Length: 450
Image (cartoon, rainbow, N blue to C red; front, side):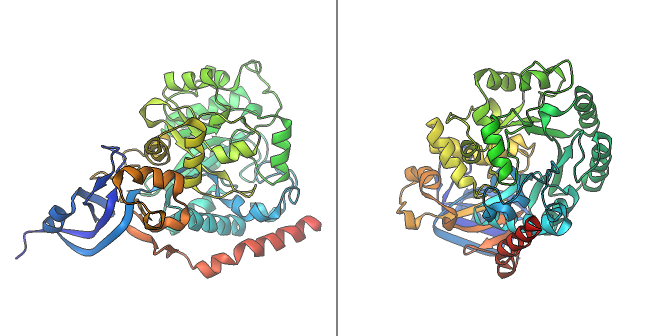
């Protein structure tokens, strides 16, 4: 009888980029997986002897790294991507003339499925999503067996989630109860149009978040009328864009982060979105109070933010997101890593950390994902670096950040389950998904014309 331990999977890449506990690129290592979790990380020859495995996967030209974490996106906006500026007015959360289809369950379901497939192809295994219908987005992500944090919108104004703040919070608490113990789906609060929310609503939100031990994420500030108007014409609101109306409160004259601090919101468990609009004083405030910062550099630049380095907070509290795809962007953390590295002059290994352990920390998931360590969930991505001519460990991180695209992503596992194999998404019918963008573009265009 064999005395070897059992494992479901043994992955043997040429290189391993674990992120933590070491930032070094390792060679001749393997990762053993069972029941969706990482059992062991170590020399491949030793793990072959230690474990009796159901499946052994050898990737001779590849690097294995933690699945990427998209810390802020609007998945449904992927269905607006091809319509162009001016085709739609308003966005799903503001009720400014967007076709009713954009607030329907089928729109959210199709958009979320299509976005999940695109993210998986790019090595993203976890995402935080602001959706017009959180319950539908949560069901869709759960059915796809991916890891997601779904936003619970809070607004004083009517949205598809409720007519006022009381209705929003009531729906949020009901959904919280439904997903409280879910292994892959989490929830967080997302105040909408933060500058226009009253002090009373934000204070109430803080109290509810305290009771539920929930996280909060919200934009930092407006970026100016030109950028704001341009994006609204494209059908969406993105990270740092807020309504220009002053909050009806005694804190109206304070800068956004100062106002949030005065209301007790800037603290551990809070994430500010819009890193290129975060100045040194704002970064110092977030640093001092244990909050996180999420940057979406490609989207922020397109909306008019000045090029700037993404502030790096201690404890891996800086992260990256893709934001909305409605302006033609891709749900791609490889691209965000590259932009962040170029803007900030970052070493490649630092950019990789932002998109993995940084995202996990900002979302409160660092104990589960973000690095390749025994005990963590087996959310993993494998990239083929052979076509980039990578032949030495010292070049791996640079190849990932400055050379790789989604075409290099060969395999993706979510909780040890194959989601992408040989570059193809296997959790969805790709032919069915391929028809969705044009189908929705035609439908929405006809509704707008009517």
